[in-house]
Amino acid sequence: EALALTGDHALGACELAEAVAKRMGMSALERAHVRLAAQLSGLGKLAIPDTLLRKAGELTGAELDYVRDHPVIAERILLRARGLEAVAAIVSSSREHVDGSGHPDGLVASEIPLGARIVAVCDAFDAMLSHRPWRPAMGTEEALVELRDGAGTQFDVAVVNAFEAVIADRSRMPA
Image: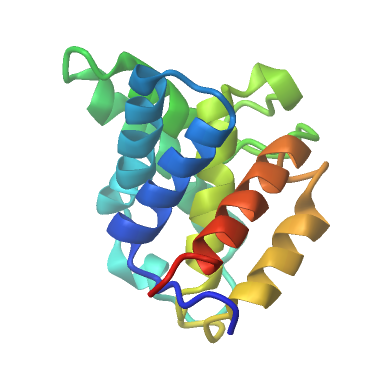
């Protein structure tokens, strides 16, 4: 495998999100918001029963709607903490798709905060590298292919390109 990355969300997605944000020219404060949003993007899942999160089979429509609400739940939690408004906005929009097919608001392209577009790519990559009850973990190259395939529909093309550049840079770093 070209790069040994674990499914360790706290390390993987957060560090990658911050590196992508830096590569895309975001300020230090914006990068800090993106890193924190990547770390907290799953916060709303605390309100979802484990039986749904670990279900091996396909979710019913009602179950899927319930699980899809987790970014909104996370936003509500984060908005109760003064100073985390920018982080809450990123988390809330991190499941939007650039073609408008995402949720919770069906935002399109630049309507989605850049930080949320970055977190979406990093979270997806991290999830693909992690074992799930319904599928085995993917390898790095397979996950990168999935991101490329989703660029322009689910993911922002510029973010996927920046992400790939960060991964390539890290694969050249000595172990």
